[in-house]
Amino acid sequence: MKLVKMSLLAATLIASSAFAIDNVKVSGDAKLYYATHDDTNNNIEAGLFDKTSSDGQAALGLGLTADLTEGVSAGVHLTALSALGLTNIVSNVWEAGLQDEFWFDEAWLAGTYGKTTAKVGRMTLDTPLAFTETWSIAKNTFEAGVLINQDVPDTTLVGAYIGESNSGGVGQYANVVANLDGNQNTNFGLVNGGKGAYAVGAVNNSWKPLTAQGWFYNLPSHAQAYWLQADIALDFGLNLGAQYTGIEIQDNTFGGVGEQTNDAFAVMAGYELKDIVTVSAAFSQTGTNNNGLRAGFNVFGQQSKLYTEAWWNYGYNTRADTTAINVTVKTPEELTYVGLGLYVTQDTVGENGTGVDQKEDMMEVTVEASKSFGPLDVALLYIMTDAEDQNINTAGEGESYNTVQAYLTYNF
Image 1: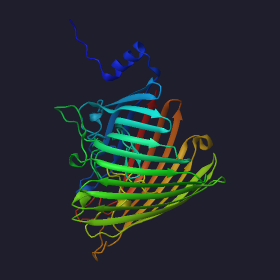
Image 2: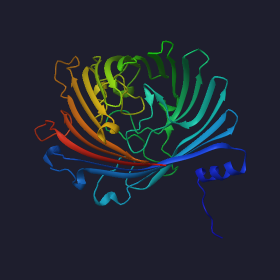
Image 3: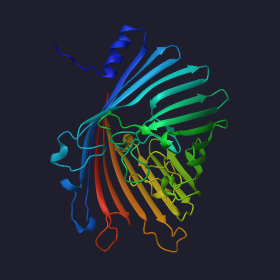
Image 4: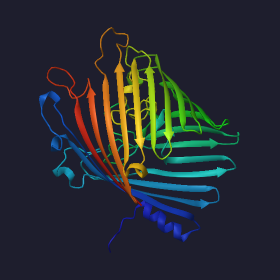
């Protein structure tokens, strides 16, 4: 007798047809990502499209959501990764390793009563200092419990506990997701040594042009952080924003030493001429910290939600004593056949109280062209990076380099 293994996703589909489960939705995407850069690191030359300086990977995402009964819903999502034979032209992948891998990055249950919703399980999160990053071919998610209430007019109150995460690491050059545990087929691990992390927040829109939000985070015995933000979107296309965030640590968490603090602020001004162009300019400044404690970063990843975050070289704007400037210009594909984007970022790291140049400045210029062909999304990018701590030659100096990327995503 032949035994057939059935996935959780397939079993859920069959069960939904056998019981009174309504509004079942199946969705997913297939991705193919490729990137290549020229490299003179330690004077070992590697040009664009050389195998040694190229990355490629394929991914399949399958998701299902359903209403189990009135006010109760559930969802699951599976991500599978494969090098898919690309190892003939690339030496590296975006996430995990060269071997095929898959895992369930979402499996949650949610219930709503009145204006209160509770959600538990494995899920994505989107808060200023703890969030799911979607820039890579796979996303980090969390095993958490979230409570959302909207009884107060024009106000959303949020409380969350995070017990586990599959985030690949905090800081630059880390993967978005952790490698799988070969024995357990999971890449989730305890947060904060099993003590977890807590977040509470409030978002208010009482005065319609203004959205104000405040958040507080606690990692027991390790760190506390907060985030304040206000954004105004006026009818004639003008957008203004301001952010302020701070962090306090009690030990060597996030690269600090002992009890320390740091903070950051950012401001933004933008203008949208509908269906023609969107432009914005942003400025941010982080505080000084002799031990390099950063401010404004994702506690579970690489990126920052500060307005000045770069398109590709994440995290520079959160380094201690850093002045960052970002200018963005975008046009929709309805105007120019393809969507066009220009992103320019300059991060200047000060002496950080040491009296010595830290040699960590970074400039990035990214040009994007994107187009949707029905369910198929295509994006091509050119990125120029000039960073003092990247692509180091034998003289110990960082040299600028070029990156070309291609993204294919088929949505279904």
